[in-house]
Image (cartoon, rainbow, N blue to C red; front, top):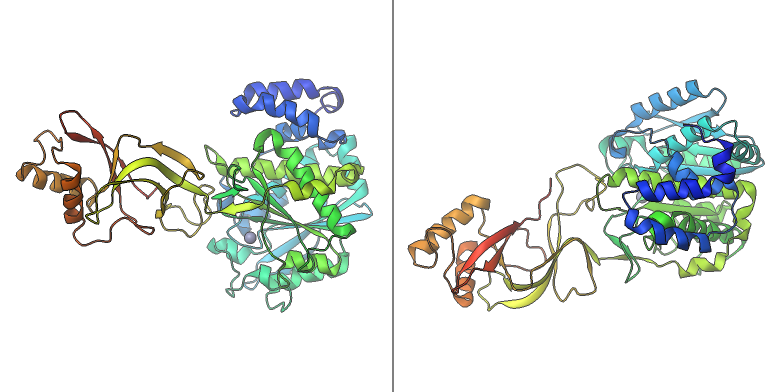
Length: 494
Ligand SMILES: [Zn+2]
């Protein structure tokens, strides 16, 4: 699809309102749109977030994590064939295992912007977004906005800096080294390549593109973080110089660009100055760098929504760098972006349960926060990487959030016998044999006796506490002092 100049220049209302009508985020779209009108700076037409959102090419139909080095190269070759002259491959680095790492150059402007993705092999979102940006620039090659972008900027793009890690769906490279902690020693070929590109091109700005855990909130009161940003410091004091003002403006702009889809979901990445990391070193070496981390967007098509947000954020920011409108963004608004906050968002948050935890103790009121283990490898776009499924916290979780929340007011949450449904059938048969359950599955046991029974059916396994990884049964009163099982809650996902 090629957007006509009419849509670019006069069609904002049309594009915006049709977006609101079609979007699955319909309920949020109208007020967000009004808010966006009041807060968006006067940007060039090319940076209009709604236009970019609608124009997202979505070229990577597979999940971003499934896109590996070979397919990346095939796709780059296809884009080059579709749009001759769009980019050149200036040079190729070589990974520890011999995979070629192309440096693409788009445009010929006086200001060089260096963008690199997936230096952590299992953080794939931005690689797909960069492919979409290339496709978009190809499709819009003849439009004034793209012509301006490529005449004022030179984009130096390294998609998938760590192809060996990507092949293994893991963070580190083939040497087992975190490339993003190798900026000083330069023992990784990938890190040396990145450093050599930086030293030769001396880019004005860097964009370091990552994913972080999806289970992070924007401040103590915000929602799940979709994207977080860091104007990367060059010293412990977070000294602000002109370069950092630029990346602070970029972060503020991203928050504004994404507000219609990610209101209260954009955060400042909370991290200290790290001398051996690349973003910090780039900034120290004279290339002020913005760290862009995709987080999570719980719901259907999460992984692709993150790509789309990344696409709008990066491309919108490039347009604002090209047309000069970035200078109008108030860098002081950066400090008002909420910080990323960990341990406040669970996959499942069970609220207001009377808990029977298997330790033989009397029931008590508690909330229970659980994370769900995923059978899918690596970054799934929905589950925290590398976490086991199980209980993270028990107690008063009033100020916490769950991607899925279950209110168990008036119900009992009981640790389940091991062995799944079969385990429960055996336990129920045993209860029935002792006159504590009916033949048709009702429990006739008192709460205090049930506590003793639950301890017995755990058979010596550890009772409920952080780290408990078993299932739960939800019991609901069924009249005449009886209970029935309403549902099972398991910390293992698909
Ligand atoms: Zn990373």
